[in-house]
Image (cartoon, rainbow, N blue to C red; front, top):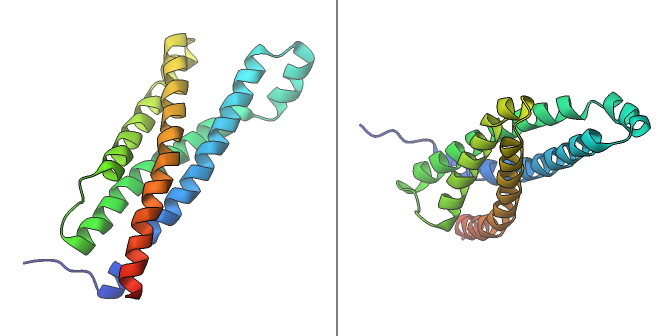
Amino acid sequence: MEFALPESVNVYSQFIHPLLMWVLLGLSVYALYLGNKIRQLRTAKKEVRKKLVKKNFKFRHHVIGAIVLVLMVAGTIGGMAVTYSNNGKLFFGAHLLAGVSMTGMCAIAAALVPFMQKGNELARYTHITLNVLLLGLFGWQVVTGMDIFNRIVEKILG
């Protein structure tokens, strides 16, 4: 027995993934900003350090990072589920591969945090490198995703 969603759900569900990804991109850039503030705090002189500590960048970075990880995983799975629901298949291509790779990079970067907290510099630089690469891929994903989005809109509008 095959399960089918109502047509209206199939149509409107296609807009959740792009919207979620735009929010995720903004949060990712904010996480980068907070991470840079933590690096600045680590090397700041005593007077500047006192001011920066009060702003709680580390806690905020961890919270935003956790939200980014959750949204990245949910957005990837959700995007694939909606695509499959609407088409009966996934489209194996650069957008899918990059999205799944980004999700893996995000999970690995998050998994490095306990090592970073113990002062492991290799973990810190790997975390930073993975997240910078992830943001670069994200920028490219916006371009390919908007192309897909435009094709979906054209299909819906006829």
